[in-house]
Length: 410
Image 1 (tube, helix red, strand yellow):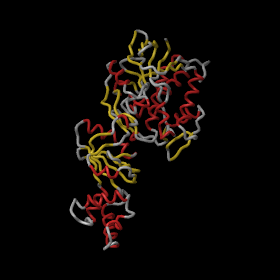
Image 2: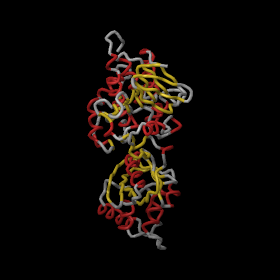
Image 3: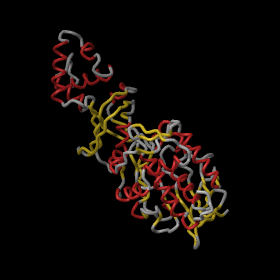
Image 4: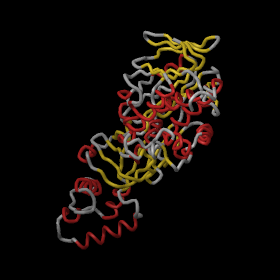
């Protein structure tokens, strides 16, 4: 079977690439491993699809080549993403910079893309697992388990290896390795972290506002504030997600990775100590339960009291020691929750081998790589989808430019 352009992967970046290339007039075929396209897209934003963010800063991304990331995001901006989807009928709803479809349904975004692919005549082949890409004198041969495809250009957009049940099985990295492309080590990102301390089992299920700071070999690396989630395995929640990839790299490099949770980030330790001493005097002569009530979740403040007592047989801890625990609640990280529970991957194809203006391989002209396969990942808030739309659109635009025909629909 022959097409002008084959897009491997029917996720966000692959669909953006297919639409963009087909609008140029190219004959496009999407090869998708799963029974249907866009399955992972349906799960984004808890099913609401936070598809971009109006606050776009390079500090929201991690990569070994942030200049590359910045170039792509300046080429296809958040405003371009809004315009792209507005053209498909998606009315944007912005909440503090986070952009959702007005329907607040990820299915709306996927449906709009599907309708456009159908209008443009894009061929979609599902249940098709690509095993190899072979460069030929004119184009490429794409091998699946039971089929073979020939094309002029290939856009490799099959995602990373986070959440395999949604379609990302990591096979894209193997396709790249077979072609001799360099891969920056891949680790889970946007996921929870497992810790050594046993007392987290007693705190499982607690949600509380606070901040969490990441230390690698004792050096402060990152810090985020928001709703923290405590689990039997350790710590989770968006603030933890934001630096989980960095923590995973620290562990991969055999470095000591620790976190400190601050349950009173708006107060410095002097103010908190003063407050606790006054509270202690106010409830003097009463039980610890009276003192604890209303400070934090009952289980959490009770555990903090125990830790502040340093296992001594005391009814009340020293208030300065309690303040220290409340501001520096310890978590020694042993591992991340892994790829099955990660939303994205950190690492991927080395960006030094990709043209930032086109997302085309330097080694193999006509081969484009997009989205999560590249060594770039964003924090929560629509940043990873923006990266997918941007890289997909840049690749599709360049791959399809020679087929441009003003008589084709666009």
